Structure formats: structure tokens, C-alpha cells
Amino acid sequence: MRDEQFTVIGRNPVIEAFRAGKTVDRLFLQDGIHDGPVSTIIREAKKAGIKPEFVKKERLDEIAGQGSHQGVIAYLAAFHYSTVQDILDYAREKNESPFLFILDGIEDPHNLGAMIRTANLAGAHGVIIRERRAVGLTSTVAKTSAGALEHTRVAKVTNIGQTIEELKKEGLWFVCADMGGESMYRLNLKGAIGLVIGNEGEGVSRLVKEKCDMVASIPMFGDIDSLNASVACGVLAYEIVRQRLNG
Image 1 (cartoon, rainbow, N blue to C red):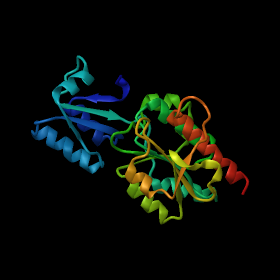
Image 2 (image 1 turned 60 degrees about the vertical axis):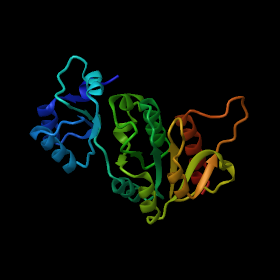
Image 3 (image 1 turned 30 degrees about the vertical axis):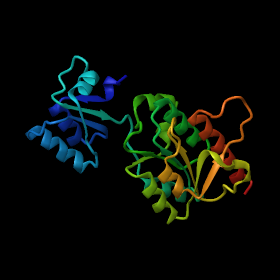
Image 4 (image 1 turned 180 degrees about the vertical axis):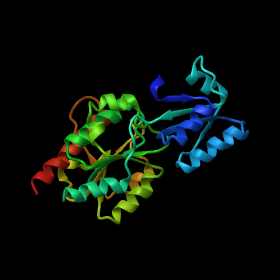
């Protein structure tokens, strides 16, 4: 269900949102429309680093309900995004080894909100999320984080794998969650580290997993074979916390 407070419908309102410096999470444009106002919106989106998603009219009708969308709808972020550099700078300000959450395609806003809350409570310096095919900083995420979003730096990137490669140059190691990995209790998770959690259904994507230095599994002894993504994130995060506290 869309949140009306953060949904902008129509050409002029979307143009004004961009020009007012609003943080646009997603931009939907109707397939086949390329007139002047739409070209202006595409130009403004490019300046803001936003890639439009071209969809059928029926998708826009569904989002807009009774509203006249004119082939254009934008979702605004409930909060402004930080940059990856902001997160690293924050770790340096605290004189601590960087500890990051990297979320590879989380789609459920309740999961994302819970993970941001865990990141804050576990002392992580920030959260990195994927730009496309993933939830952004919606009002539901903000509510689920129970205030943590106001105190937690969240950066949005176009390519998780490339971001991991860049962060490795800053001295970070990366561990991803996967049922086929080594028990988390046998891994050295100290120092500058990024915890990678994958999509609720598919897990960490193959290309991202290949870039990780370690693959961690959580020992499980019940009759089902997996944990909710946000719960798994919390369990692994606090194993990292335990090891950091023990030096």
C-alpha cells in the first residue's frame, strides 16, 4: 500500500519535487511517453542520480487510484540518505574500526526497519542498501525502526558488489550470511567488517557472495531450516559485537 504523504503524482508536482531538492527513492514513467515535460523529468532525475522505471499504464493507475498521474509518479524518501563516505567518516570520528551492514535487496520495509534498529543498537556505523529492486527509506521503514533511522546513517548504492570492492581498499573484510557457510562461531569477525545480508527469498546474490571474504551460517537445531532475514541479521551482528568486545 502506498503512503500518500510520500507519493508525488503528476508531471508538475514531480518536477517541483526534484527542483526543491526532495530525495526521490523511485521514479515511475509510463512506457511510450516522451514529450517535453517527461523529458524534463528524465533530465532532472539524471541530475539527481535516479534511474526511471518504465512501466505500463495499468501499474500507474493502480498506484494513483483516483488521481490523474499523467504518466508520472515518484516515491519520496522519508529521510535523507547519507553517503558511504559519511559512514566511514563517522567511524573515524569515533576512532573505531568500521562496522557496516550491507543489505543486498531487502524488499520488506518491516525487515529493513528492524535491521536499521539492530544496526544502531549494535553500534554499527551505518547501513548500505541497494538502489534498485529493494525497499528504500519509506515511512513504514521509519516507523519500524522505532526512531533508530534518525540516528543511523543509511547510504543507497547502485552496485553492492562494486561498493564492496571499493570498501576493501579501505581495509574492510566482508562476511555474508548463508546456510551453506561456516559456523559463525568458528570465524574471526573482528576488526573492520561489513555484514552482508541478502534478499528475504533468494539470499545474497551470487556475484555479491563471491566478493565476500567469509560465508557465515547460524547453527540451527529446530524443524525448519531458516530464520527471518532481520532475525538472522541480529544474530550475526551480535556475534560480531561479542568478538569486538573481547578484543
